Structures are given as structure tokens and as C-alpha cells.
Length: 100
Image (tube, rainbow, N blue to C red):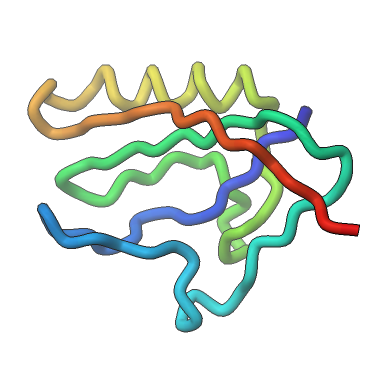
């Protein structure tokens, strides 16, 4: 499969829900066939993180510049440089449904 960067450095606040994407984000997510199970990786840091995963000249959502495995390796390396209490992450399974 492919990896996509949906957002980078979105402002968040503790215990404040953030719906994504919002109309102000300028895009709508639309699934393309085939339907099935996919994964979303969420990384939260106390300070903005320059990952190099999205092309610098384009605003997300964009295809990642790395393979899915490369994205994981890059994130692991970047997060290893930060104090343990400065970041958190999770991988969420997502069922992709395609309407015909």
C-alpha cells in the first residue's frame, strides 16, 4: 500500500476534541476502492515536528515521500530524539467503506 500525510503540526489542546478534517482544512477525505481495513498513525508532540515525510512544497494531504515502512522508521528515529514525556503516538485501525 501507500502512505499519505493527512496533516502535520495541527494545533491541539488537551481534552479538547479536534474533528479532522474541518471545513477550514480545505479538503474532504474520500475513500477509493478497494474497501478494507487500513491504519492511521497519530503522533502528538509538545512542539512542532519536522518529519520530512511530506514534500516540503505541498500542503497535506499528500502522498508520503517514503514507503509505509519508511514512515515508521523515520518517525521512530525522530521520536527517539525527544524526551519520553514530550510525545505520544497510536495506530488506529480504520475500516474503509466505499459507496457505489
